[in-house]
Amino acid sequence: MENFLFKNWYIVCTSRELGQKPIGRTVLGIPLAIFRGLDGKPSALLDKCPHRNVPLSKGWVKNNYLICKYHGWCFDEQGVCREVPGLCDRNEVRYRNAVAYPAIEQDGFIWVYCQADERPQSQPYEFPCLRQKEFSTFSSQMECETTLENAAENFLDATHTHFVHSGLIRTDNQRKEITVQITRSENMVEAIYLNEENISGLIYKLLAPGCHKVIPIGRFILPSIAQLEYRTDSDRNRLFISLFLTPIKENLTKAYSIVTFRSWLPSCLGRIIAQPLFARAARQDKEILQLQNWNINRFQGESFVLTELDVIRPHILYLLKQGCERNGSSLFEKTITMRI
Image 1: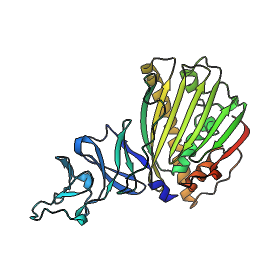
Image 2 (image 1 turned 90 degrees about the vertical axis):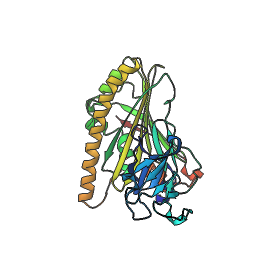
Image 3 (image 1 turned 60 degrees about the vertical axis):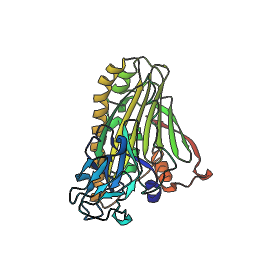
Image 4 (image 1 turned 180 degrees about the vertical axis):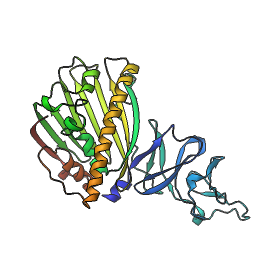
């Protein structure tokens, strides 16, 4: 699983966060120095000067080069050492170079591919409807002491919403029996919640009033995307909440939330209403995830019990374990009923 995770793109920061100064980020335990090089394009180097191992992210950018603050060694966007101040021999020597990682800017985010010196065969994930004018979008980010698997499960798990998000997303005393269709392909698992009709929470009532039918869909997409889609009986209302999970290191994950919606409300008013509600839900999830992580550590490891209501977690684990093995054995379909 670990080798598979490294061969993917991850968000390291927003475009706005990466200005004229380099910044330090960690992905999958790899410390990175992120900076804008030639033509303002993002670049990513291992955050260690090959000379005396000072973090390059603490340096500065000059003439498109990243300068180490200790002895002034200069590196281009490919990690090539272009200058060693005071050295008469200016010939390129490979052992002076820094390790470089592919980087790209897309949809307002800086992405890094976590396999050094390799040309990726894919592009970063494209968030649904993000580039469509009739949809509005806002984003946020949150760091949480949890694993990728537990963060993804929490986001996609419908059965915790009655308690952790009571009144905000669902209410325990307004449950109804529904059908859940679970489908797994080679790189994704999807759970479609049928017959839920009106969702009892405040968010739904404010953003989609008058809609008598809603179909929530939960997806986990490799390598680390948890996504909720809400379809209604009105073409005016549609909602995507995509959570891109960037593993920083063991038990520490950065979640980038991208909310894209079309509503009966004017887009600016929709954002004003939706943002604080989603922020509150995110804080509630962070609190329960960190409590879970603390107790797992207290008991020195996970010892979970699964039931039929756990419609997503087994498939998240399966997909991550299978990694890049793409074959028919990944296909899975099942229908269950639950009260939600």
